[in-house]
Length: 306
Image 1 (tube, rainbow, N blue to C red):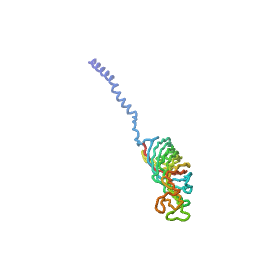
Image 2: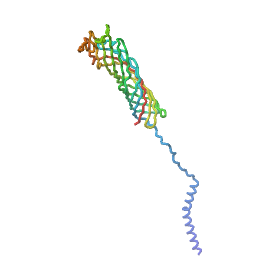
Image 3: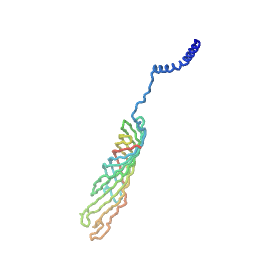
Image 4: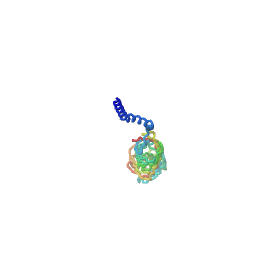
């Protein structure tokens, strides 16, 4: 019996020795977990969605404003039958008129410094008020001016600060200017006017001319970024041009110098139609003129990025 008990005891001891590692291993792992602190990674903080500003973009927009124009217009050559007093040869003055236009361009910004190009055009919807001059005899001539269309290309450079963009520009402008003249001169008969001969001669004509020229454009301004797509701008331009000649063509008119008792209206005292000795239809004749123009432009506009 003691021998059987001894065998049982030996089997139990062998089983315990075999099972001990399996029982001790989980306890050891749990003890290690308790002894070693666990590091938990936290999610990154939520940041507001603010994409970086574009470093380059293109845009298009509209503008309006005012143009202040200064002019000097002289007669250089006149038809042989007209002397200088009959065509006023010294128009000097200025006027301010509204303009409307559009622009397109592209910008590139690096470290807040701006470089860009811009092409723009504008027109003047209205002509200037009449500018009139009076000379001897009496001779009176009125001139009106209108810039039909201006086209300009410029390089822009500047600085970006927050929502503001400050810039200067340098470029060339092509200008197309219309001139219109309304001339009238009469001289009474030296021996007194009569019903049949109220004047000695009459010089009446209307003429027009067009001057196309290039000018240097200088400008500066500021632009405010209202949001990611729209901006508003305010700028000032100065356009410098040189003196240039142009032809002024008479569209309708007459020159009439009476040497008898007939009216320049070509009607005799008895009602018959006659032609005075020195009557000329001046339509189609050319007066060569020279003009110097200066322009200051203020523009207020909006741009849309694309």
